[in-house]
Amino acid sequence: MIDVTVTDEMADDARARSNVVRLAAAQALSGANSAVIFATGSIVGATLAPDILLATVPLSMFVVGLATGTLPTGAISRAYGRRVAFMIGTGCGVLTGLLAAFAILRGSFVLFCCATFLGGLYGAVSQSYRFAAADGASAAYRPKAVSWVMAGGVFAGVLGPQLVQWTMDIWPPYLFACSFVAQAMVAVVAMAVLSGVDAPKPAPSDLHGGRPLSMIARQPRFIAAALCGVIAYPMMNLVMTSAPLAMKMCGLSVSDSNFGIQWHIVAMYGPSFFTGSLIARFGAPKIVALGLILEAVAAGVGLSGITALHFWATLIVLGIGWNFGFVGASALVLETHRPQERNKVQAFNDFLVFGTMALGSFASGQLLANYGWSAVNIVVFPPVLLGLAVLTLASFAKRRRRLQPIDEFPEPSI
Image 1: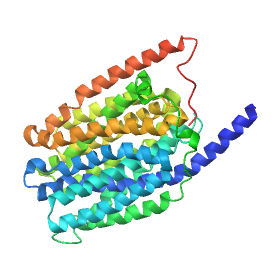
Image 2: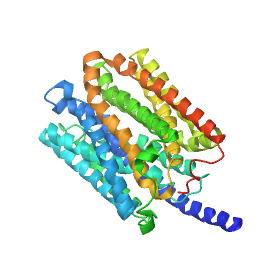
Image 3: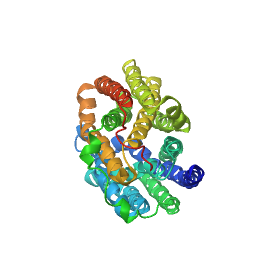
Image 4: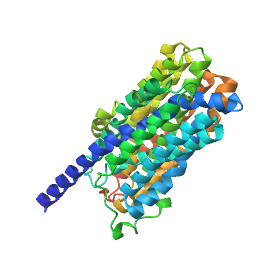
């Protein structure tokens, strides 16, 4: 029996590895979507918006799209399989680029906001790639699967800003119009890559059963995982979305901004080549805590000066902190549900993360315009302290449960 179980796990991991390759490639391609939007969104917004205070609204609409798309992504994946959700997402990615280019040509702020909203829907689907990589994998391989898919974002960090750099001036006087046309073409390539993912429609037995979501969400582990994700991602987003416009306000060039965003995205995803191994060795809570601390360090660097080097250092450290915090929090989520519960739990977790981001994004433009770059960085510290406190309490609760004779529920097998 033990030999059969080991053989089954090896077969499942082999299938998961095959999916990881495609999902990592798709992560790289879909990451170019968000990279182009974040590199250009506030600058285009400042050009098209009727008021400078609305400059970051296109980025906020991207985050609203992220939040809006999470629960439907989970529902579609649960009913029809993840691959159907992937195709719908990449379709939204194609529309994003085409509509954004058209909006720039027409000088329409509203259409540009609609385009970035569609980009957020695409981003919501791409966020599920990390969880899809863990489907069917053994407990030991899951953190590595999540980590390796996230590592695909390294190439997005190169591809997205370079697309902007190579194409932004091709169609004068319509700055960035060709950048979004190129982004649409990249989404078409992502669609082709994802069509080969082995993600069959869920069995009828997986569509029903499992515990109520309210019961799962009350677990200390889930509370800690969701809260740390809510802090790690929105705080990173707050600083990242403000940085390009803040650099422009400080007299720095668009090239300086593109360079900062490029290395920020590389820093976001580069550690993923070894984050999974760090989680396996030291445990997810310690890696999450390290990530939150690094985000606070990044905010401290941002407060120390406004030269290009200060902005670049802030964005790089911020990216590394986000990786440890978010990948670690995602690994914690995988510990909180059973196989038949995975789609609803993962979608609910992402809804909490991106819903919070959406609320914070609308405030980022106002915060930067009214109070400056320093205020943006100061806001990071209180949530980080809260996350560290809750993470400590959850770890203490888990140690207490180990002393009890019966576990909360058996180790999930995804």
